[in-house]
Image 1 (cartoon, helix red, strand yellow):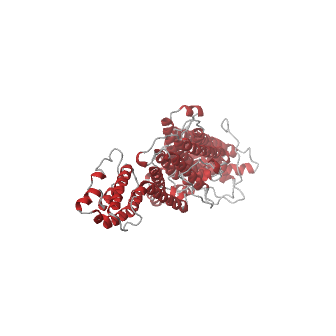
Image 2 (image 1 turned 45 degrees about the horizontal axis):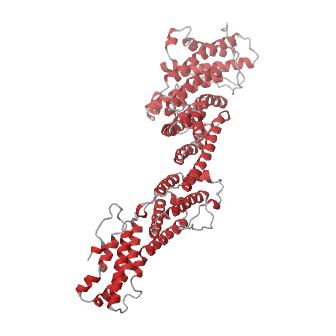
Image 3 (image 1 turned 135 degrees about the horizontal axis):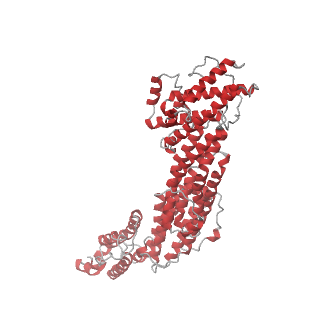
Length: 622
């Protein structure tokens, strides 16, 4: 008699049954025309023996022992017997013999067998949590490669030495993982084919979802509201973002990848089941993971520096997008892809706003602090640190800015010392945006240069800061975002600013010497020229001794230029007119600087600070 609660099974049309002898170690083989009565009874009798052995309700041995762990060959025999039983049941049902004793007996055995397989399925999943964790499973190079694992071996047909050779070809951890996956697949195929998919799926979802949820929890992913994020101190939020970036890396590399591989393999016989299982197990955790960047991007109070964390999250999603599309490809889990896209869109918007905030911060800087010696302004250092860090996200910024309309040129600030380099050729949006930010910085520096009382130092200040900007561009990824033409034209601008500095700083010294330094001169005229030169040189020296030029190339360039113009002219004048003054004693009285003294003092320029500029006075030289 059938057991209480016996269910009717839904069978799918089968391919013609195989031919051959029927023994405990072989599958049903029969001509397509059907089975004889004796064949049917023999198949059922064979199945009854092994099913009864592993019936937990009648066998104490079966209650405490795992069939798959006790004897793999017997487990495979059990599976084949159940599959043979199913084929017989299908044959009897299709022959309108639904009331036969053989069918009733087969159905009763099937229920006992399914109950046993449910237990085995649960035990394998539970006892192999470590070997079926996503990280272990995800070590597979691809989902399809799992198909060629040990599950392909017929434990009866393959000699022991062949199985041993196969085992030696993989690591011990992989071996246990593959064996467990193969066993689960065998059970799942059997249960699904026998109409017990629901029971199989319930067990799988229950255990695997707990593993994924535990993994998400350990990675620190939790539901966080916008209001809570807004109340967080930046240091706390920064740590949460760092944790999220690490969680994103691990979850995409192992957690979700491993689960998809496992699910696809075990339920490869049914596309709908593997989709529903994977969706049920991962949807909640994946949506929670991809929701965090969107919440962070909505933070109202934000400083320009936070853009780098947003860009980091944008990069994490963008770089993993192909994997996201592949892993979460099922339609039933499209909410995960949608959430990832929503976060990308929100991060995109926030990054643009922070770029505008950075631009506004430069324009609104009202500091009137003068940098001693015309050195590098803190705003320049801060801005270039910001821009060079931005350049590390060049590809991401290109995506973000690609469809961002360029701002109106009328929004640029007024300038005088620094005039922008015109460039009529069209530039990429990212290049245009970066060059605009640098132009705004230069215009702001131009306004700060006006606070210097000495116009020569104003020009030196601009030359120093522009040279610093160009140096930072060369040493960072900014050089790949700005055209060579842009960089070349601004290098020319540095030279012009340096030339202007020379003219205003040392022009009076050169003017104190005659146009033709070797032209004949009366003694009184020569003495007056030496006197004027000494006064103007000493005055210029003391004004410029406190100036700094941090860039060694620019410093040498300016020194060489001044020396070539000043020392050479003074040397000619000195050689031509020292005898005009009189004897050696007269020269000592009227000539305060020898040409080599001038060269020495010039070489001492631009390397001192206001606190260390003390030294010998030019007036105490010779």
